[in-house]
Length: 69
Image (cartoon, rainbow, N blue to C red):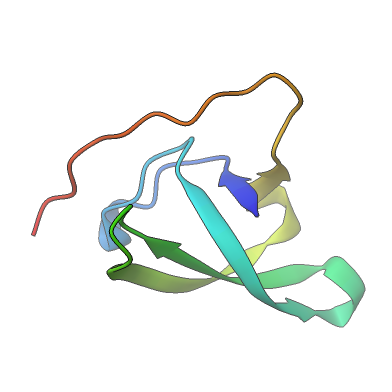
């Protein structure tokens, strides 16, 4: 799991959203990441550069927000 480091308006995603890495490109230079609602509905599957995501940090807590749509 990773944390989005920047807003992706075209996908309705915000910095801080948590996603699941489903594919690693070129040894970690890029990632295919799935973002889903807490009840399991996929919001977006996005190809991202390594700089656009970060690992989940120690002592972080998840925060819920509504998704437009």
